[in-house]
Image 1 (cartoon, rainbow, N blue to C red):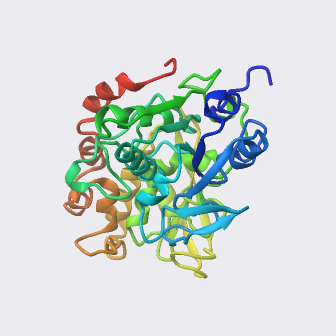
Image 2: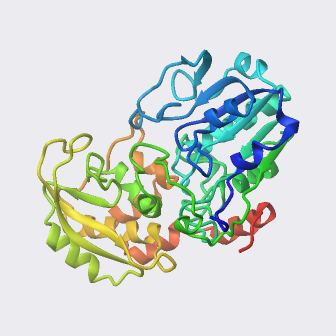
Length: 384
């Protein structure tokens, strides 16, 4: 396609200055060229030297489920270092053995996604070791224009939230790396290989690029669009649709009346979305093998749809209508609910538990958003 967006890897392949360097490649199956060739394969075929591979959550092969630790391995004689095993940071000795670290993974435009923190930790390791760090840019699949939510505070940082990000941060992965270098990771030698023929408002299907699921439960761009909102259901006893063919688009539980839930949500007249009632039986995760009812989200207007606003309203309806059955899921390390990690504090469940309305809760969710947007502008690369 003459107007196809050119991902960073395709430009990197023609950059002679990187030839001969021992590359430490951070990637998974979402790292592919415009023709679908895996980044690691394209580099080897073009004569580049991969000294080491690094795999994020779900592994270099991208096959492990969420939260499952992955061990080190060897692939085609190349050592593969897991960044989701005993440690989430690259070991000093592994960084010492490379000349350059290259990051090529598709993000989903959302703060909860752990690949963002893998990138940050790798940048920090390279800064400490004096090694250059290169990001091969990719489109933000939900658009790199809109921001939704306020920045997470330092006191609430974890591997699913940090570096002052809102739920939807409105940057490409390369722009995010520039933001990190400017605000958090001082002294890193960063280079971003930019996208060509790309606008920040370009929907993913308009790029002409193939979509490869960046993780097992983000099978489609449609999933990524709702994820900044419905991922919050991970912190509840309501299924977020894992174990179905439409994870994060399907929300429900055995004790929910799907049609009643649908009618209640439609009565809120939220922009850009409709719901259909659903019967489903998860094959794994919450309520494995149990008959559930709930709803499926259908985004009808991407420009108007606000995933965080929508999820807050859904949580509010469940608290109101199923208060005796709805529960916050405990955090695995204690000290509250896992939703506190995602929301960036216990304010979300406190407000909903206190019976506050969805507009008030959403207003709190977006506190500080304008300040983040001002900071973010310094690091943008593409027309908006």
